[in-house]
Amino acid sequence: MDFAKQHADIFGEDDDDEPTNQDGGTHSSSPSSSSSSSSSSSSSSSAASSSGSEKAQSSSGNSRSGATTGGGGAAEDEEEHGEEATTNNEYHDRADFGDDDKDLFGSDNEEYTRTPATSPFLIPVLPVIRNNNHNQGRGGFGRGGRWQPGNQNDRGAGILPRPGPYLQRGHNYGYGKFSNGRHDERFVSELRLSKSEETLSRKVIQIQEPCELACYSRVEGGDVIFDESSLRLFKRLITEDIGADLNQGFDTFTAKNDLGSQGFGDLLACIRDKNIPLQNIHFVTYRNNLNKILATAYIRNEPWEMGVHKRNGVVYLDVHKLPERPQNEMDRRRCYWGYCFESLATEDPGRGDGELIHHVDANIEYCSVIKTKLGAHRILMGAEMDCCDSTDDGRRFYVELKTSRELEYHTEERFEREKLLKFWIQSFLAGVPYIVIGFRDDSGRLVRTERLRTKDITQRVKTKNYWQGGVCLAFADEVLCWLYGTVKENEDYILQFAPPFQRLELLQAQSCPEAITNHVEQL
Image 1 (cartoon, rainbow, N blue to C red):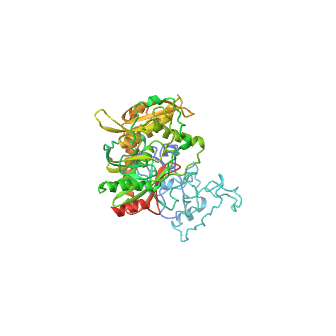
Image 2 (image 1 turned 90 degrees about the vertical axis):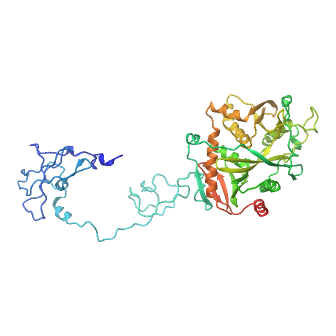
Image 3 (image 1 turned 60 degrees about the horizontal axis):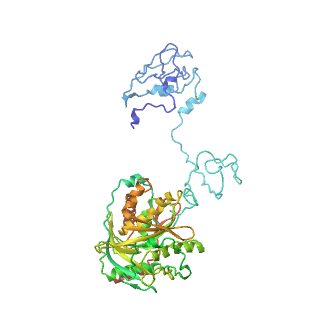
């Protein structure tokens, strides 16, 4: 916008409204050379140009006090930016806004004009207000405060703020109830989630087809073997088990142990055992951490965190498990139903046809080590696989097994918005082509099964505009670029997403997990 072309009066009205003489002429009285002009008591004739195209005139008309004014006509000024500049006389005569000859400043006019522009006195600075009452209402800073108890100034706090430093953003000022940001002394950097879905959808992020480099198995007892001995085979006739009770074997269930960083050490040990080079790798992580990052593009109400440790140019992302609320028996049963369905949907040579499941050990697992590239960053990740199947020509592929409550008309949308998003992310990142879902009722009985192709899920939700896979990839690329460019060599951090869920925060950590330290020393 060109402000020079706009004609605006700072007093709010144009000069057209100023009074003019009855004879139609405009008058301006020339200023006296000094205050010795005793014959004139500040003659006031209305002086203003009613339009920007007219030039200001000066006439020697009679003033109402009968005194004559000396001087000639006012000189014309040059036009500046398309409008005529105001003469010095006009500035002088603007003191008279009425129809009579009353001086605006009265008898003090001459003293006023001799007042110097600068003062020899220092500008007083009032003391800073210390507000110890954080629960005050409308009578706070800048809003009065005259009715507050203990306020010694009964006239209120005034309209303008007092000189001195402003209130800093502390004590939840400006950050809401769940402030967890810059007041934290561990704070390093943040990535605000300000880009819209439309903006992210315009970005095209390339992702390399996942390539399996190695694998390892955790067997009963917790030992790790660098082979595929724990890999299970998918049972194609899973439909024969519809109606099965998923509570069978619950009493003898062995829950999964929380290994912490030791589990990440098993992945790093497999990388060393297979001599996988890390020179061109940017991130080493479990798939679980990438699942959290990609899902945050749409799911903004689930907190998470992970460890971030940069060594020799490689950023290691360690899984952190947040505290959970205590589970009751029903919660434990729902968790077990998923493990039970995995046992039903896989071949078990030790279990005969129609035989019930006697024991399920959640610690037995098979993990694939996969290399991929998202945007500009090469990623080496470990991904737990449920089972595998093979094509007619013998080519092996993995199958993801999931359970969900049977859908109803009011639950289908949430299932497609949230659960299908997580299912797709988990399978897409590791290159798993098929997902088999076992739907159950509230009592834990298997109602039906459904097989989904991973690549068909995005088409299913695209017509309903629930979410876009490309937006998840673009969001993850933003996070990885910010993260890799922010963290420093041989330093440790925590990346967290916490209430009020408006930004990703990078915090300083005190130490590095021993599994990562030992891994770097053995390279």
